[in-house]
Image (cartoon, rainbow, N blue to C red; front, side, top):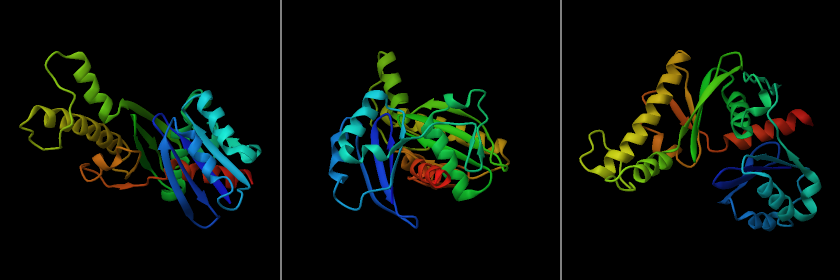
Length: 237
């Protein structure tokens, strides 16, 4: 049994894998690491706990504390030059965010071919994986909420938008929200076009806001980072 934990900029996400399937999905705000203590003793002890952490050392330490007697099973994932059939195209492989690296590994395990991996969270990441499993590079954009916040914080007349999507917005709040969605979708579509129309895999809290609005084939894979962690654990076994 493997427990996989994704410590993101805003949320913690976790799930269990028994070698056949996922179960026990959970999520909590990043500051609520104490919730992980409820996992200890609630079921069979995992033989390994895989963690992808981009939230900083303090959060990682709090996660370890919450896991109590299980902390000796904790393995912190790192971005490397290659793993699980994926080659890291970064000049300094270790500088690639580990959540992006795990998502690429997860995507390769599910697709086994060229795809664009989109993490729609606090920031939006758009990463290209070619048919040979090589990470070609990617983009980092402000997430949908950050785009809206930037307009509200840096202009005198635009509100903090809580609008709805429209192809032809006729209210300012809708125009801001729709503009953020359209800008993000355009960047994703351009990345897919560079890979000859490769499909797009979406994950992250804002993924539902993009799904169905892209002009390319796409599918939601909310456990993509966790899937990558699971594959890394299998490779190390």
